[in-house]
Length: 281
Image 1 (cartoon, one colour):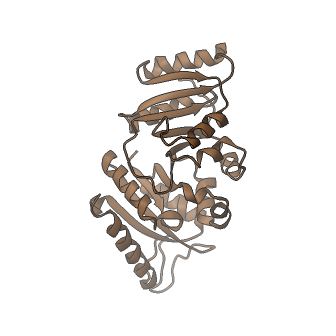
Image 2 (cartoon, rainbow, N blue to C red):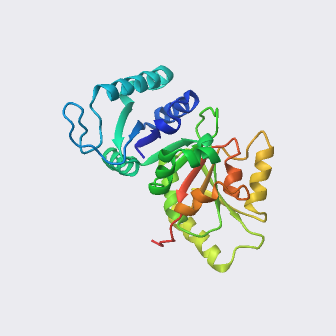
Image 3 (tube, one colour):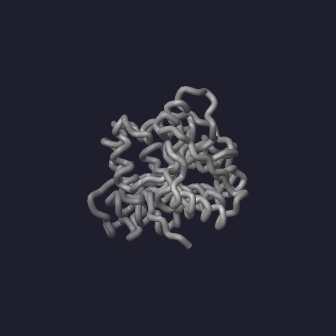
């Protein structure tokens, strides 16, 4: 993980989130990319002095003024936390999905951060940038940060799993990018692990090392675990980690009965990974 993306249209003007991300980038030696999108149905490639490059970057004076305003705002709230050379502010003009994909590929973005606030029903329904980001490029691990949350290194990460899908790659990613964090794998089941599930646990311990994580079977529903965490002032973990299917996940967020909706009410950052089928190495 080297390049972090924060979408300015969504929550780049949140001082709390800017400061959270700046601290995280400094702590983990990451480069922060802040992107603002001027939406158009099609990319404009040439228009006299008001031309836009094939990458979607805008060079006209009006947009340059907007970029300066964004840069000054970001600098104002992060200058005491992170060197300005670690931050890249960009404006892109064009089709949202094409612009996002082009920017992510060009800048090699490998991590996205978003505020918990933008997952509310109104934000999902009204913000096209947000919708396109999460529906079309949710392959990139995404950290959802609660409102007004101060950054502290993750000492303990709780990985909520049913032992289905590709846990191995997700756990490797966490071990590589948060090496100082303790990883706790929580399997939610009212019965003891089946032979297949135990085989998977043994495989993970063999490949990752038994000391790389702890495994615990919890005989409760995930919803009950989350509901308990919502009611406590001291969360059991500094960060929760979930994997979920690409499109179903974002659609389910507006369903108040799901565990993932409950997660969004917890004062605890949540790492979201795309669900992938298990690929034994």
